[in-house]
Image (cartoon, rainbow over all chains, first blue to last red; front, side, top):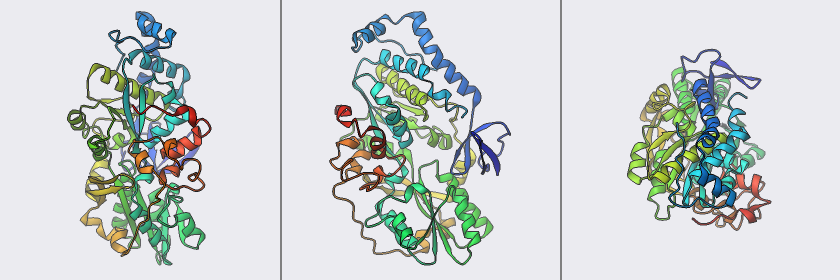
Length: 86
Length: 371
């Protein structure tokens, strides 16, 4: 068992399924069990990627997408915008 | 709390929404499997931010909702016995059985206790050696490892008065059943992130291939959901159908190997009937032979169960994604959280409860197209 801080509330949690969890790491807890660690680096990467989404659009200018949004309509077929994925 | 607020950031949500709009050229219908995701979507109005024609179909991933009526009735019958302490998570208390619920059993003098963890129920058993202590073990692959560990501990510590009433269910066979339904409109799936935290992603490529559907492992915060939708739409627009992980901070391909090994020891797969849906082959877990003495169904011979489902409730169609909650005639009138006809109106993961909580004043406007 170990102590997990839920935003200020401390609770005893079973760590049998994550035996190598270190003090200071983040974890997903379900019904009193730590089931998986939360990877801080990949959380930050995802947020960074979402931040870039708009920036890339500004950079490369999806003019059809912009025009479609202004018109309040769906973009015409054949003008597909390649979404940025990880 | 760390990584909750960040993944609800409105500015980043807007970027993802814009990107989804910029990517979409056709109409698409995708299913979020998990009831927790349904609540995020309905609560934040995510479905209302999507391009016209991109529809979220709410899936069957509400553990309380799909627990078969027969098992609920068994639970009620066991809980009403005089020498039994019946332990459960709180969300089962008001799930309607054929005639009553656990809340009613308690008010009639039964010893029903709400626990936070199955280990609490094991402690109750240690403290009450003269009573039979039964824990109601329901849920998907996320709740199965805690219950498996508890039974393992009961056996290891030799706690003879503890048993588990088991009705576990698994996501992949449900996806298969949904795709095989003749009425199926689902073109892609947001897979349940926390199920994959435990099980990993190995079960999904075969399903994506067989049915030609993208399967995107997705988390539960607004940005997670939007990222899952973006990746699904992107695959659909490109005519692709692969398994992607949009919840990398919590899901590794291999899942949690320690938990999977425990599941393999304590449980075995079995056919399971899902409330409102019907029997799905190999979609459940029950205790394996080694642990059968801890099986409450084995310990308590509860026979002569005649189930009686509400004739008005359409929760089965809601769970299969065939109708939206407010399309049921009883929604918000005959059926409310105070007087629920079906489990979907009770559970914090039920689609009817989500619509009642966040949408009942505006449902006339949110009638969505049939696809």
